[in-house]
Length: 220
Image (cartoon, rainbow, N blue to C red; front, side):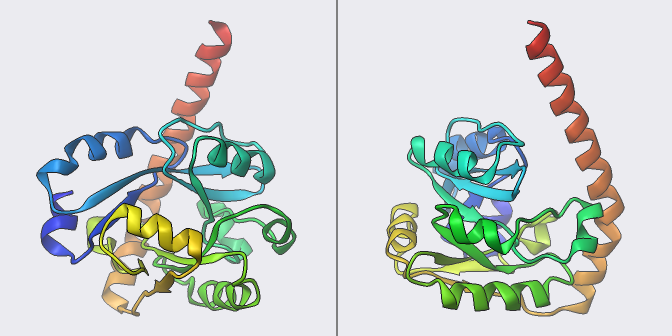
């Protein structure tokens, strides 16, 4: 929150950790101390790819199909965004799972991410922009930094009229948003790439915690 307030010009941040909204809820409780507005979200790892659930104070289970995941996001008044679509298949071993065009065509998403700052997704971003142009009547365009380190926050973003999360929500619903970024900076990409082993290790630890939690819930 300090970084977003002091080192960026963002007016709204959406915090979407994988399969949890605890960090987003914590940040939202602290938001009054900072100049940026906070959207409580989560990045749900559905069986059909990752889905950003914006304005979702209730936790959504992972591994549901995309139809059910989006339905649960909508049931609590949230909006559903297709995350990093068209990422290359070789990224899957690094955890960057994504759905297929057939899923994007038939699921009731509210938007599609056309700008993502993960290194080497420039081609995927290009394909996502093309997909959005062909589906602009039903999908908003969004940008997200997908930041796994502070210096990446804000390097991709959603441009919209206004400065508050209410303004952003209205713009997504009216499909007047625009995805922006990322600019290509070799040093930033290098630093991000160096963090990939650490990111993968943390991701594996997170998945183990989720499995332990599910086992404990089943035992109870």
